[in-house]
Length: 403
Image (cartoon, rainbow, N blue to C red; front, side, top):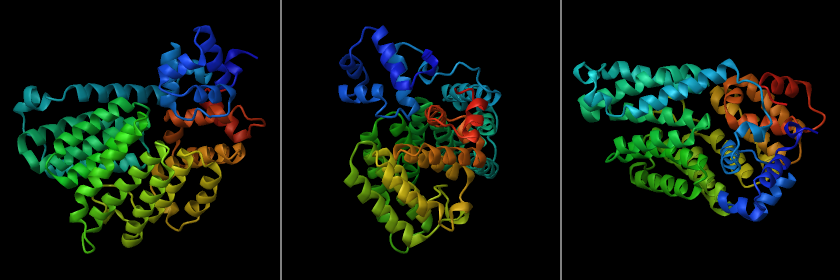
C-alpha cells in the first residue's frame, strides 16, 4: 500500500515518526491530549474538520494534501475560489481606502442602491454560488465602506451586512482567520447599536468555532443574545426574536464544541421556545438574514449531536429535519450545509453508505457546498476509503481528485 492509499490516521503516524516526534510531543504542539493523537492514528477518531488537518499539517511540516492523500490539480472552480479569496484578502487590506484613496473624492453609491446589492449578495450566498459571490464582494465592501465613511450611521447596517456575508463565505471556504477579521470589523462598525452588535456576533461566533475557540464563541454569542433581550418582548418584531434565537443556536453549537452537552441542550431548548413563538421566518420578517425557525432549531440539534460525537442521536434527529414541511423551502445553502452535518453523523454512527447518500444529496442540492468546502472534501476522503464505495460517491471522489 502506498502512502497515498493509507488511512489518514496511519499517514499521521508515519509522518510523526519521520519527524522523530512522540505522540505526546505532537499532542503538546497541537494543544491536544496524547489520547486524542492515539485515537486519530488508530482511526478511532475521525479527522472531519479541515482546520484540524491544517493544524496537523503545520506541525508535521507538510501540505494538507499530503494528509488527505490528494495529488490531483485543483478544479477550475477551486482555482477561481482561491483567486476570489485573494481578492477578498486584498479588499480587507484596503480598510482605509474609503478615507484616503481616490474613492474618497467620489460620491458614494446611494444607500438604496447599496441595499439592493447587499440583498443580491445574500441571495447569492443562499444559492451557494460562492465563485460569483467572491467576485462581487470586494467592490461591495469598498462601496459600503465609502458610504459609511461619508454618510455615517445611515450606512452602518449595510456595512455590517457586507462584512457578515464576507465572514460567512470565508469560514465556509476554510479561511477562518480571515473570516474572523471580517467579523471583527463588523463588530467595530456595529459598536453602540445592540441589534447590529448582535447581528455581527453571529459570524464572529462561527469564525471562532472554525478556529477551535468554542469558549470565546460561546461567550460572545451569549452576551449578544442577552444584550438584546430587553428589546425583544412578547410583542416585539419577529425579526429581532429571530436574531436572538440564532445567537442561542450559535451558542449551543459553541457549547457542543467545548464538550458541554448539558449546556448545548439547554441553549437549543431556549432557541426552540423562540422558534415555536415566531414560526418559520420568511424573507419579509428576516431583516437580519438568519433563516431562523423551528426547522433551523432541529438542524442545530443534529449539528450539536455530531459535534458531541453522538452519531446515533444525530441520525434519529435527522429524520425529523428532512420530514418537516419547511425542509424543501429552505435555501440551497442551508440544506446542503446541513446534509454535510448529517453525513458526518451517519459516519460517526457507523453507516458510511448513509453518509455517502447525504453527501451526494448535498452535491445535487448545491455543488459548490461540496466541491469548494474543505470539510466536505475531508468527509469524502474518509468515505472513499470505506469498501465498497457506492458508484455515485466514487464518481464524486474522482471528479474532485480524491482517491
